[in-house]
Length: 493
Image 1 (cartoon, rainbow, N blue to C red):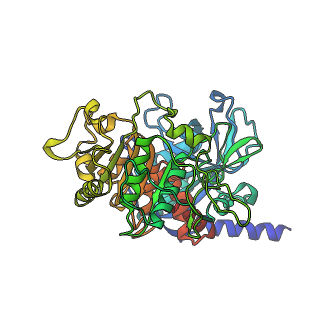
Image 2 (cartoon, rainbow, N blue to C red):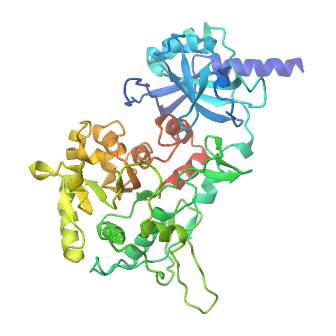
Image 3 (tube, rainbow, N blue to C red):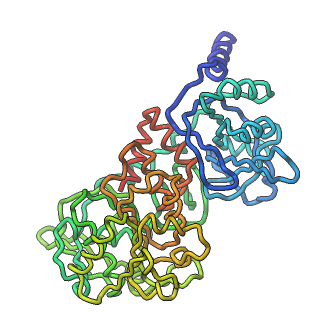
């Protein structure tokens, strides 16, 4: 028994304290506490240790799940502790502080931009959970700083440990197989009062899918109901508050398949106020989707024509003028389209060619002729602008596009924002909208991180936060973990 214990200790020592720490190809994020910009570097896993989240007495209702992921953020302005590190759960709620012994060892390295941290509540049932919770801290460092980081951390009396063995029932993977399956699509005709063109079959299928996604009341990807609570299967966070549905997604048909006309048909329903009851015969085409069902699907018995009934209660309400929950801003059914300057003419030409004259009013927000008055802009059904034009004024307080709560925002050629740190990427992510679409024929070009900017725009939490994207997708993908490929499938609409 003693020999086995000694062997395990030597293995742990070799894994966590040798100078050849396990490298990975994920990215390092320097927390910029004065701004949202983060920088990416190659990293290596330095060590893991157990400490505690303290200060939970300020949150008497706080309940953690075992192995719930948390974010650790340096708090430079803390008046009582110059080494303070705040702890947030995956919903961005502050839940406490890292124990002062751990924060004193780590904060100088964070301030020097030498390390990145990941946190995980190891066992919510141990200790005095009213006031503290055990937390596993993983430390990552740039390869150029690895030696200095090791010397600094190993010089402190932190309790280094191996990785905990997680229960598969509480770990990830459950949401992917449920939501990433292949499902059949229906078809939907556009309103003839607005759209005079005849859609091809695949465009009708795309329109059916867009309408269903915009009006679904289902849980967003990676959320499920369990024991009366809503559980995120990635972070293991539990809440009694239902997460907001994801009204939008990535519309990634191939180039040249008529996505512009399909989207104009979607916008057309805002004018007529309803969706036709029958959507045509069921087509055998299939698509990877992120929902359990596509609206209310009614399948007849054998020998009867199959139709898809879209008008369940929530869709009727939405297109019948339902006022969505959220901000107090006045919301009209306006669509903002952001695209490269070379694509602006395509939208204008498609609108002139395929819509009834005067049915949709479009304003091109670009150049000297752009309207800067918010109330005047609200008179248009579609406002069309370019990534460059919007980015140039998006950080100005007077920018009218930021003062409107849009019914829908469409990013055309959305792969333009694949650099999440670019000014235009951060600009479009700051827009306020009820429905969000990223339209591209190539959502991933260079690697999985191309997809992050789109997820940030869609606000698919927690993956829309860089720290969670890195820990839950990028780093495991680098290790060729099978679960992460299924996750990528779930979010690749």
